[in-house]
Amino acid sequence: MDSTIHIVDHPLVQHKLSLMREKTQPTASFRQLMREVSLLLAYEVTRDLPLETTEIHTPLELMKAPVLSGKKLCFVSILRAGNGLLDGMLDLLPSARVGHVGIYRDPDTLNAIEYYYKVPQDIDDRLVIVVDPMLATAHSGIAAVDRLKQGGAKHMKFVCLLAAPEGISAFSTAHPDVPLYTAAVDRQLNEHGYILPGLGDAGDRLYGTR
Ligand code: PRP
Ligand code: URA
Image (cartoon, rainbow, N blue to C red; front, side, top):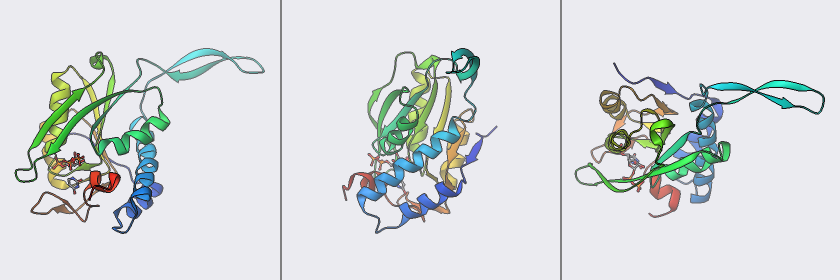
């Protein structure tokens, strides 16, 4: 069984993603667009959250109203570019819990190297939404989900902005139980593991480090 892939093809997401791909987009606009698009991705990934009813008093009468049920969900950002998606998602779900997995891709081997891990203790009881804008080889995404499963996470979703076909195939083979959400599936990886046509290095573009 492969993971379920959700392509978020909402016109606003597609428009904002195209603006982000443009190489002349200044850092501040790139960051702002990432924040806006992540809010829209959060809307899609939370579409099936369970609801329960509770009694509330409107100014006119008592009613049974739907509210989210269960424990608050947990976002896990794969540092550092994951934080670009995290910020917009927290605008929409300000009470969510947050974990961080620090992983970088070795530029020569493209292997995922972990350097930080901190997540809420009761992660096993929460829906965990892992965020990272880029799924290229998927080494980072697979390693993060491996680590979270070791840490007890049972119910996860993975959200990115752009995915390569190679990454989707690797991720869904490694973690068929984790649904994937992406705004686009691009053509292929280049010889350095960058997504084509892509948007370049997401972390560098978010933080102006190159
Ligand atoms: C980028 C990106 C992903 C990873 C994707 O991170 O944010 O984590 O590459 O590539 P993969 O699917 O081939 O593993 P990077 O290693 O550049 O680290 P950074 O976010 O700290 O810049
Ligand atoms: N990481 C990025 O930031 N961009 C890519 O195209 C691939 C990996």
